[in-house]
Amino acid sequence: MTISITDLATVRARHPEAIAEAAARRARRALIGANGRLMIVAADHPARGALGVGDRPLAMADRADLLERLCIALSRPGVDGVLATADILEDLLLLGVLDGKVVMGSMNRGGLAGASFEMDDRFTGHRPEDIERLRFDAGKLLLRIDYDDPGSLATLESAARAVDAMAARRLPLFIEPFMARRVDGRVRNDLSTEAVTRSIAIASGLGGTSAYTWLKLPVTADADDMAQALEASTLPAVLLGGEVGRDGRDQEAAYERWRKALRLPTVQGLVVGRSLLYPAEGDVENAVDTAVGLL
Image (cartoon, rainbow, N blue to C red):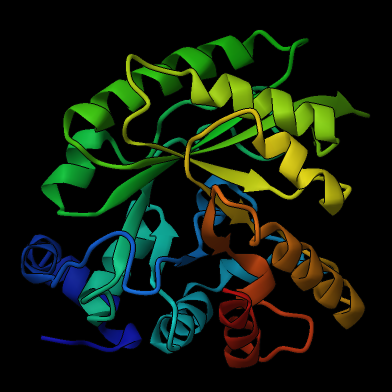
């Protein structure tokens, strides 16, 4: 049974079992499709309190609007699936838009944006057993490492145990690593070639096996150096889209960086969020189709 966005609260209140039922009947697919590439739309930002897009600090706070944008993105040819937290994925399950899609559960959202404990990014989202129970296809974790913040060690240890637990279930796990530091009290990710290379080396070695580990990587500040950074690992990788400015020229520059990096042998696809769901020109369909065209 497919419902509308306006019915979600009613169904959740009166028939919470509908979520498990929708998960049980969802048609699944292989992680990598016939074209050998992966295009995932990401929407796990709200659970970390990161609601802003460009100059709009609460752009992602309107859940109905976000769901409408996700439904449009998932309907476009070439979009393989979605990455999100439990609340959003369960809304999409109830809306009936996840059949034949790759569904990735976001696992650690405890490092709230701007918090003093941001680097202690605890696993407050999906557990491996949840991803298995709901018949989802993969998990994702964020791994920010600040050598000056002890919270990074707790995140590293819990990330390693997540790698083990996902591998025991033969479920792919996408690790999104960054070398980070605080600047004027705010966490900033270092996208220099050396920092990205170091983050890849650290993330690749987590856990007792890397058999089911993927990397979700930003493009280096100098896109021409991405090939050098990727020499640090043989693990398959997807590119992190990240947020771009509200200027259409910034969007075009981002597309060009992705286009160059997608030619590299270990890169298997894209995982892009706000820059496609809230594009500078406001047209989700066009932004998604352009990104798919890069693949």
